Length: 459
Image (cartoon, rainbow, N blue to C red; front, top):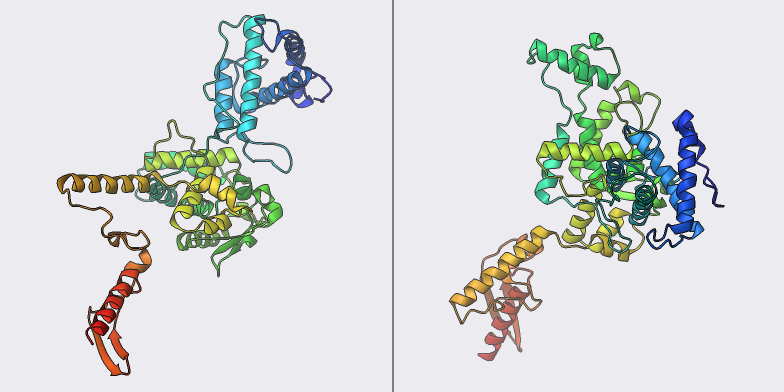
């Protein structure tokens, strides 16, 4: 489809529709003419400008192809209201992604999602005013350029459950402990995973079909490294530096061509990946390829299948998915937010491979709700104590830096504890000799200073 007001449907859509293509072409022509005459406001018959009408036609063609690919339409020549809702949900959840070379597999941004929604609204407005539609369809999901809808961030409890579920995902029961009738059903699963006939399945095939190590490494590394779907698809064995427990992601194979290439892996993620590498060598589908992960059909993962995997793991782990935007990017969102909150902004920025600290600050510097809840509980406790004791001062035991003595830092609590004894001896000439063990804290140093002053004042 061209940009000079040509409403001709794409060759791809024509191929998919076959002998029904001319019928759809007539519909597009009528829709386009209607937009030029009164598409801006049908009731007042206000016309829509030609470039905007062109854009709606282009997006409708794209949505029509999505509907044929991802749906099972009863009528192939049009999109129904339910199908439109499904399309927007799949686009929003990252199961329908960009197809253009260079950005293939990347999620659509909030602006693009809104434009798809607007095109569908205009299409259904035409169907209502000019055709036989009984109602004017409205989207169930609202998109806005100014208010983004970031992926859901898992709580620590939910993340722990997901990682546990990934360790055993797809694992099979013991061959010998499985009853004959159940064994036949699992033989079908094994045959599907390995691409062999059901009657050919052996005990060794059961062992080879256990996918838990692959999924464990995929999810664990995907979380730690904040990998985008396109990076999962591109990931190659030479990226992994086992000795230093890190990945080096080439800029040309990274999402958004990120200049920073090095990311750290936790001990658990490195162990899972090393275990998978050992198993991977014995999988025939990996012969002749250096891709780290392939799906059951022997192809690189796509965004849609990764989103499905995360939601399946949520189901196994008992994590609620309803009314939450849980997609593959939820792992990156979780890692980035937690790393920013637990450590330094620069650490999170490097691990996310973002160029600007301001980007990390804007997208990931949000205090987790669990931490805010703990802080609110502390506030409530102070309030209750103050109500019971008019003399109570909640700021009484704060350090000079504003840190409560009851809320010491990890570095302070990790320091060795020494006997509270200080021996101060005068050596003459106004000098003193001090034998003491003190913690490396502000309060300990201040205490020692007071003792020295008291000792000198008594001379």
